[in-house]
Image (cartoon, rainbow over all chains, first blue to last red):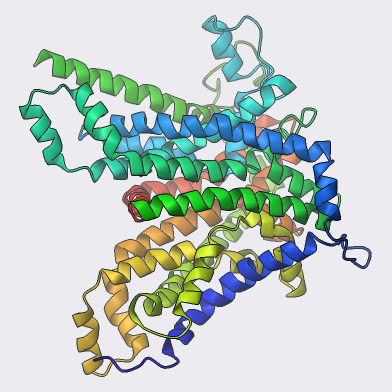
Length: 286
Length: 275
């Protein structure tokens, strides 16, 4: 029988709790409180009730950024849920050099998003390599204004988010694939079921938990897009790429409307919370 | 088995195409960084390879911008953050995995809820706290908010749960303290999970941009992502230099990645299985 641990557990927990409490939980309460004030770092902050939220509801820039974020979610998530499955199937085979390919596909994941954004800004140049490729293969006649045309800019930024996420979610699916018992395939082989049929009837159904996780993770990530926008477009042209987090950043650190920005942050939190609860629910069911 | 040769060839073809898609932009960046000042980088059609490859852009970046200081800052901050994450998360995970005490459930719930809070919501109050603690423009200020995550605590807890209790009990009979058990008995048995946590925290901190952007205004503390961004703002006309700076910032993590590729991908897979 172990003796009662007394104070020991608390001592072990102090550093973690101090950091997570001090830099996550306490600031969280602080943010909610600040969203009810006109806090701006210059004048004394006053309690204003739900004024910030009311102002948000009437702010076309807020709605624009919320709309951009939701559109982001709708386009990016299906791509990031489906495409990495094919990538994972592609690299889930012991071939010579397969580890090198896995590593190459993972490269964008380890690259800092700021650098990724800069790389793509250069690739997207009017006279850049991508336009050259598109024109010389006859896909388009004139150079595409990827980042300078409001109709294209958001989609161009989305493509970068997708490019970055492919390798990350590929690895999650790879883990899922490798946990599928081999004997299922062996049995199917004996029954004479084709490889394609095996993929449809064994692989995909057993991959469902991974698919659910990737769906939730990629939607939460899409809610928080910031770096790509900051580096490539600064929210422009004409606010076409201004996302919710970019809106919060600008309100807080360029316009110093901290209270107002906090209210937008609480909205972001509630949306993320909804997605996280789905996440927990999915994980519990596994 | 003709068809199987064909399917292997098709697989390699597909692998190569995807590899081009992920490597292409990096190679184009590298090619730009190696082009000399006399070469027109906006010429049409673009020349894929530099006419006279040169390292002059790299030297100019290092001479005119404190890139070596950015590199030092990045290494220092990432190193400190990884060490802090490993120690603090595995310390906290031990009682959560193995001891009964009052308030355990409450701590569990608080940790779990902290995982749902996006940093983007916290950046304003955390900024204020950091200013009040005098953490602006300091390494401590860069590291502290990243020094422990609930994800890390849960990852380590899961690892400790897999260790047989008997090991711990016999260590207790031998008179080891809890701290000694943690260090000498438990930690050596969870090295793979520690590697996973190290990789996750390293990637996160190395690429972090938003937090340093807010908390630093002294370029002497800039990490590489901020340095590259500053370079891009300073030399937005000369993409050769921007490309050279970007390549410079990728090389260290690329070296780490090649050296410990196994931990990156296996670690990420382990993290995925654990959820």
